[in-house]
Amino acid sequence: QVQLVESGGGLVQAGGSLGLSCAASGRTFSMYRMGWFRQAPGKEREFVATISGSGASTYYPDSVKGRFTISRDNAKNLVYLQMNSLKPEDTAVYYCNAHRNGNDYWGQGTQVTVSS
Image (cartoon, rainbow, N blue to C red; front, top):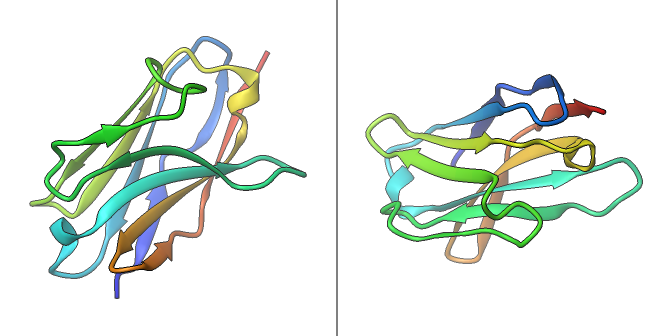
């Protein structure tokens, strides 16, 4: 089992940048595929980015491709989400996710608000 704690959310103007971090517990961090999801008020949670255990493979939906970058540091049990060229529609609670062997673990979420 892994526990996740996100940090780095806040308020930013449209066009600005913001970086999120997710700290994971446990000694098997590199065995988890990590991801970021977000949920806006009244909407379903949606996928934002994912990265393989080694960090060699990443994937993004079209809505954030070219603007968001996911990365990880397995030595520090950290995963990051760098968000550039932010838009008001990026406003949401952002959740860190760890996936392994059909099991999913979630952080408590961090609010990101983009003002127009």
